[in-house]
Length: 293
Image (cartoon, rainbow, N blue to C red; front, side, top):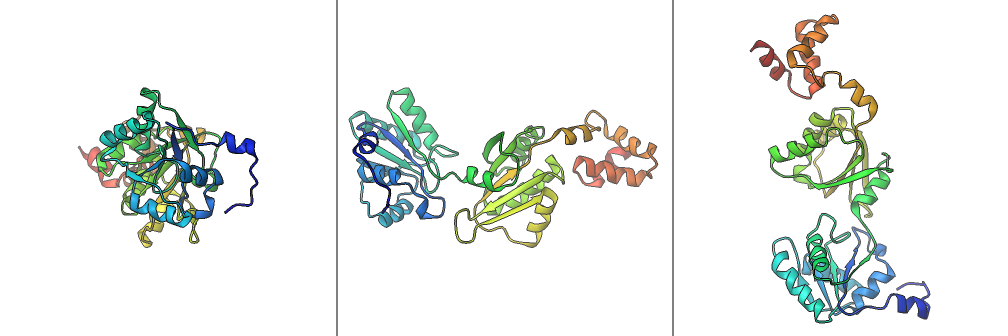
């Protein structure tokens, strides 16, 4: 399947070790992205642990690989993790794969790696596709410093609290998001980070219909009011810069002080309320009620 030539030395270096857990990154869309080393590991381990065995069977069938499989996912990871660990301690080798991408990144593989570390079971990682990194490289946003935040909570209060904790984060932020939650997440991001914060929305990565939208948060909210979200998304959000921090002059002001600041600069009371609401990312009625009270 590959034109890459392997020497005996390469073969020995990549020899499958007994009792080893291999974390094998699988393609996030384009099957041609699977490495020769990953194929070798999947072909030669004693068994494969997969997030969804039915989905993984399609990949293995494409590769012409037939191996015993066990399921390992979020809701059985505690029980099944120890079963896998016991088999490893008995000398079997195992490859852990997810539906797509790198195991242990926003994935229950994190738990079995920790379990192996506790029980002195060796682990090896076979590098490959990672949706967050692919999206980051395409974003057009700073890549020198970034943080991975994974999926936000579906609970509105918890999601907003998490975003609030990230309000002053200066690094570029990476999020995963499902299509049915995208609109609510974008609205909360706009209200927390501000309308002008830049965002890159990436979907169908490495596939034929790959799409990357580079917008502001206000632009993203407006776009998805008119267009239905489709597919799984990776959101790359610009970190807060020094200019934005200096512009947040109202940080230590009460709402009344904030409104009075604009009145003193020549705006009418209603215009000052509107400007205050825009600064704080809330509806003007909230500011109006606060002032009246």
